[in-house]
Length: 93
Image 1 (cartoon, rainbow, N blue to C red):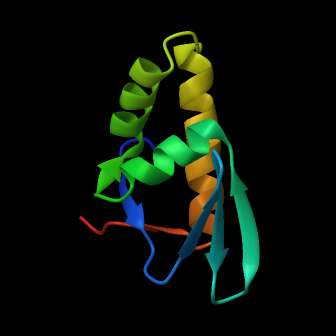
Image 2: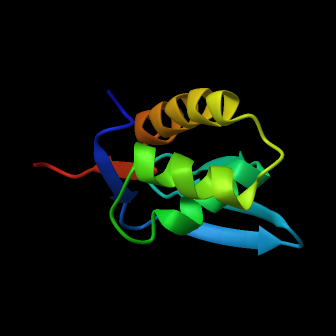
């Protein structure tokens, strides 16, 4: 389950911030990825090793008007997408 696993940013990912928007580029495939505000918050948290559950709890605190169930559902989807695109790496236990 993605929420219990620990992740960190993959090496070599280029980050660009334009105003409040963050874009990521994976040099392996030169694809450009746009992050939502919650995605950007997750990206910041992944500077250090973090579990999906820890990240969801912190993001729920940062966005108190957001529904916690929706945040956790979105977090599972986002972590899966970032991992599929090799933007984040799962930490081996």
